Image (cartoon, rainbow, N blue to C red; front, top):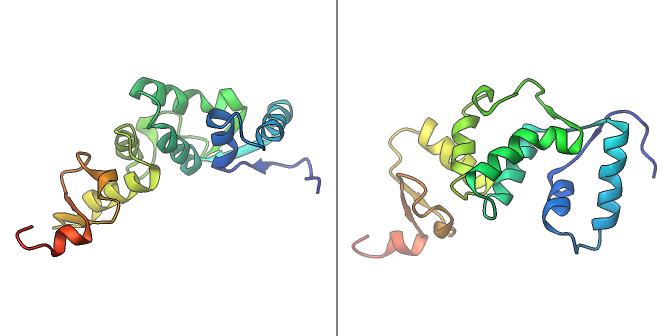
Length: 155
């Protein structure tokens, strides 16, 4: 199936394969797509996808590398990031600067989004219960427990 020449939207996994999985069976096709996109200059992605990418790569990059990825991403891939007026981390809408700061502490995007939402918008929450407690340890002021921890006497 051949796409029309209009604007195309690239999902996060296209960039993850390019940046992280050079041995992936789709890498060559993926790289060809990114070269075509660079040539055609007809691609978009969203700030959500960019933050998801940053969250995935946060486990392998230091804070400066992560900020550079964020800032230079549109140039590196010749894509427009929607909304197009985000320009800097400080101009991001609805608490995204805080979210990026959480991601830079090596939190996946959805984990950072969850923590930011709880800490900013849900009053009086003191404890987060999750089977993924290890993802959150030391990254929040909330008490982080597994269901087993919570049900144990004395916790």
